[in-house]
Length: 283
Image (tube, rainbow, N blue to C red; front, side, top):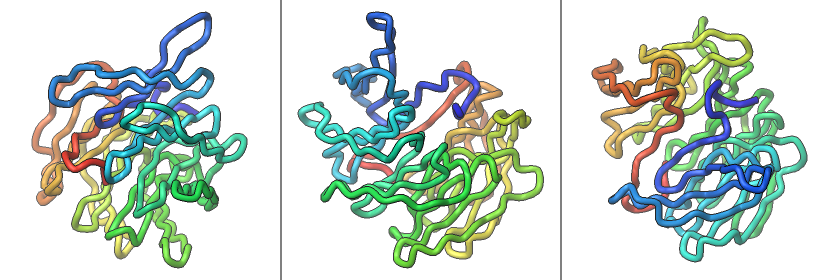
């Protein structure tokens, strides 16, 4: 199940992006390295075909990049210095991995078809799986690594996984929610969740929900553009930016006031969004 009705095979994040290009009758997929200072492409890393690359994340030191391969049910580990694939983590057939985040020294991967979250330990190569009972789209790490949150599109929920105990808490989104996709943690313990809709014959939503990570409750609803998909927050947490795939815009949100303060036209169907973390990695 693609996450947006337009360009489903392309997801862009930070200074690396996954992409594909026709080559020899097949889709030759690449991870593209971009210098954020110049916006210039500095490398194209071929990774094969038939993978459907989805998301890219970096570890805290930017030593390795991790790329989810949706159709191959794998996560690729790329050495950011040599630009070579050094590991392929198999998640099991039919998992369809999508969004990922590091939490401590583990990588948490949202599996759409697996209706689960995979936990990868890069140091040992170990992989385990946590069932979450819904189409998991993205994850977020919160409160100093105490919790991992996952958005479940089909059930209109967010689940909270307590890392120390493995306890799962289900958070139902407000009436009228059309299906959450991307989510992002603020430093003060709030989670922003984009309620996109548009899939499974659902209408576009114009909502971002705020969740208190500690209490596992929805604390605010913020109106943005139609088809709210990607979200990222500034380093200080005062501003959030939301892509609206059905409106071709990005909404700027004042997180203290919990309201939109600007709308930026950006072109057709904006998808993921991120910003450059100078120290490496991403929350």
